[in-house]
Image 1 (cartoon, helix red, strand yellow):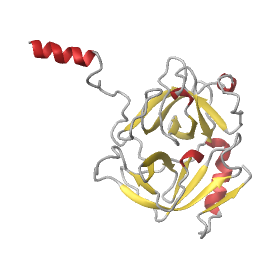
Image 2: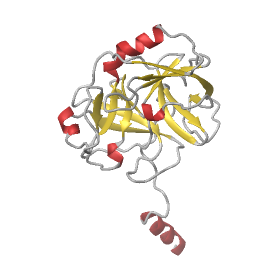
Image 3: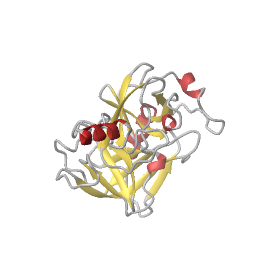
Image 4: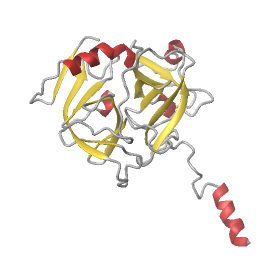
Length: 253
């Protein structure tokens, strides 16, 4: 009895971790991609069997980067994964700036589509304030706390008004029409994962740009507003020619 009471006390004081209710249902995000190299991991999203989209902060910087599809737990082999090297990285120009944070990634070979690996199409509309969305990625959901990537996490967040988001920006960040914000007061809004994927009503709407919710839980996080880039993304895919330089860019939306 004394041992049982001691174990209970330890649990209540945090000595034992509580069950994580933010885990995604198993393989519920078949478009989620883990981009990893030399111990670093971030997220992208599969939009067809050849192409991924991610944020500037997650852009592969070398040919050693591997895109892992069909992942849930990135620390074990679950038998559902496909590990495909990156072929080309195409930045929206200007690169990381107050204006844009968007990168397209071409795979060396096409993904094999199945129940664990499925693309999500480009958005058919733009997100609206009040939309309920999901954010998925690997990493900590606790502000100011680092956690090595392991299990895929899912959060429910609400799209907020642009002005609400702008009012939380520090002086060194400027608003762009290529931004959309979600989360904030009364919502768990922190996911430490560059390129975490924002999906609203079954439509791809963003990749994480700034995780402000991990610095202040009252602040919304910022995502690239992908509906503004539909034409650019389609043009990149339609005009793609393999290169030897691993990267090229274009300036227009």
